Length: 500
Image 1 (cartoon, rainbow, N blue to C red):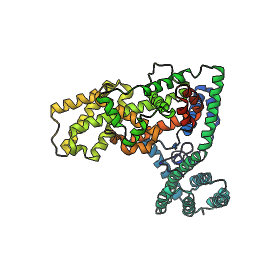
Image 2: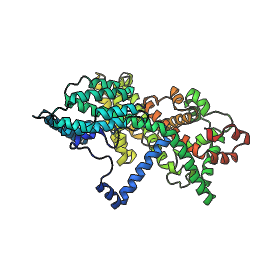
Image 3: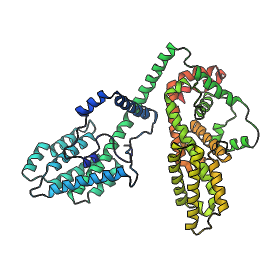
């Protein structure tokens, strides 16, 4: 079962903490349904969200559901925690009353039963019958009316069932619950861990059906595209020009000079041999170059390849992520030259500087032009370096060095900046290696300046490879036909586009 981190969307057991004892129904209420009918825009948004989710599951082979983690100390987080505490305090008060009031406990046990049943596989009929018998709500209600409902005993049974049903990654969390003696705290812990187990089951189900979904999606998308092509015979014109340009770029002689030499040496030793091979053009090489060109696509250029129109938004997101990583790596590279080997040799300092810079890039670049945003980033980075040098008892930056650091960091906002250009070139070469050799092999020998963003590069590379792989699965036959007119027949036959 897939290892996941947090909770499940929809009916979350943790949400019980912030509502009355009676759980919410799993389906939409009458008011919800009429609201959707009365507001077509909300219905469209819902349909678009579902469509986007299903498309993401198909394209991303490593897709998994995760809980939205609230920032520490956030207002939403504090409100949520306060409401949860209030609910569980109310439950404790009801159970401690004389005589005890079991109404809330019964509702919680009912929901726990539903969750446990939802975690079962279809073939697990014996466990299903056992849970139905042990948590027979009619019987438990009678016991509650007579004041004999044994909540600790039921909690112990639930824990034993959780041990049987949970993924190995949850064993430790379940075992910790066995040490809790307070019945209310135990129920609270049970709900939290059951939330994780529900998420595990969701991701396990997604993983199980993903191959079928992918195959269905490939056939469906190809059939829809063929229908369009039948109605508009010129619907592949932009795609043909896109691949032609890629083949032309690869056929052109490499420019001479230090930049060309640097480009050859930057692509990780073994990956570079595949990514920058002098061998004759192959469909793999042309398509890889074409996909890389999409990350540099001019937004004003309307001749976007028809086969990638549905992926254009994703490619724009990847391009934005690539640009942010280019700036992040450039900032770290410039900062290292001013920080000194002692300070920049501290993993804690580098990690903090990286986190601060990433947060600033996300916030500042959303609302301001790059050059204006980089002023704020530069000043904050300079302040972090200055303060950290002082804290470590090292010589602080002089006013001249501080001004020079801020100036060099600000220049990173300019695309022609030499540091940014080199980093950008190296990231593109890394992505090219990913398309040819895969992400893991490409990470083995990263070019200089990229090691500090290795985790981010791995995520970017995996997204890019997944998107291009799915696209080739769908449109491989069309690419093969186009490439037959661009490459010698022998080279086209060497590599089947559909099997990339």
